[in-house]
Length: 424
Image (cartoon, rainbow, N blue to C red; front, side):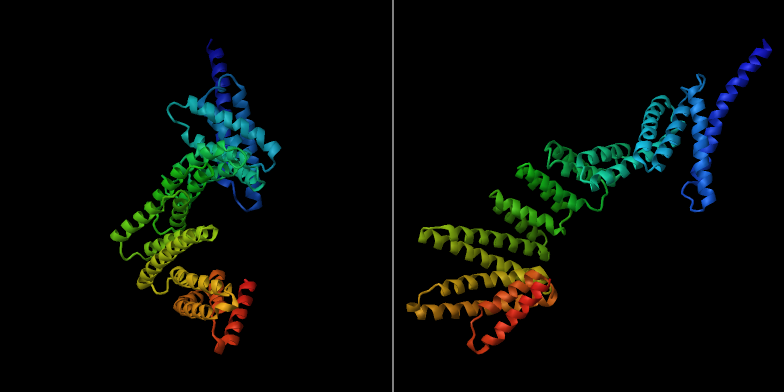
C-alpha cells in the first residue's frame, strides 16, 4: 500500500511539474521578449514554445486540467504566441484558445491568485484586436474595425484610445448602417468622462453624429456641454452658432454669448463669436433679400442685413480693443465693413447711363465705406500673409475701389494679390 501511494504521489508531482516548467519557461520568455540581441530573441522564442509544450501536457492531464493556474498559464502563453504571430490565419486559432482559457481562468480563480497572468493575457488579446482593428480601419472595413476595437475596449474599458477608436470606427460604419451611430455616441459619452486630451473634439464629433441623425436638440446639447468645459475650442462655438441658425434658435445663442460676456467682459473670443453670429444673421437676410420679388420686402430684408452687419462690426471692434492683433476679428471686421460697400458698388454698375449722377454718388459712398474697411483688411494680411481668405478680401477692396488717379496702381495690387492666391 505504501508503495502504491508513493507511485500515485510521484505521478501527481510529475504533472504539477509540467505546470512548474510552463511557468518557468513563460517567465524566461517575458524577461527576454522584445530584446534586440539576436541570441536573446531566439532564446525568448524557444522559451515560449517550451512553455506551450508543458502547458499542453498539463491541460491534457485529468489531475491538472481544471486548475485555475492551468487556464491562467494557458491564456498567458497562447495569447503571447498570438500577439507575436503576424499571420492572421495562424494567429487566429491561438487567439481563440487564449480567449477561451482566460474566460475559464476568471471563472475558476475566485481568490484572484492568478490575476497577474490573467491580466497579461488580457493585454495581449487586446493588442491583437487593436492591431487587427487598425488594419481593418485603414482598409475602410469599418464594421469589422468596430468589432475589433470594441473587444479591445471591453478588455480595457478606461483606456481612452480604446474608447476613441471604437467610437470613431462606429461613426464611419454608421454611414452604411445608422445603428452604429448610437454605438458611437455611447462610446463618445464614455470618452468625455475620462481624462482624454481630445475631448473637446469629441464633443464636436458627437454634435456631427446628432446632426446626421437629424437631432438638433442633441447636437446643441453636445456643443453646449463642450463649450462649458472647453470654452477656448473655437470649433464648438462655431458649430453651436451654425446649429442655432439652422434650427431658428439664433437668439438663444446670442443670449448665451451675451450672458457669458457679462461674466467675462475681457474675453475677446466671446465678442468675436457674437460678431460671427450677427454676420450669419446678416448673410441669411441678404440671401433672402436677393430672392425676394416684392421690392418692399427686398428692402426690408436688406436693411435687416445692414443692421446686423453694424452690430457685428461693433462686436469685432470690442474684440480688437482687447487684442489688436486678433487675426479673425481683423479679417471679419474688414469684411463686414466692406460688404455693404460692395453691394452699393455692384448696384451702381447695373445703373443705366442715364443715371450718371446716381452712379457717381453711389461710387463716392462705396469708396468711403471701403476706406473704413481697408486698415482691417490690410492688418489681417500683415498678420497672416498666406491666408487665402484674407488675401481675397483685400483683393476685393482694390477691385471695388474707384480712384482714377490711382486706378493703374490699384489694378496692379489686385493682380499681384490674385497671383498670391493662385500660388496657395
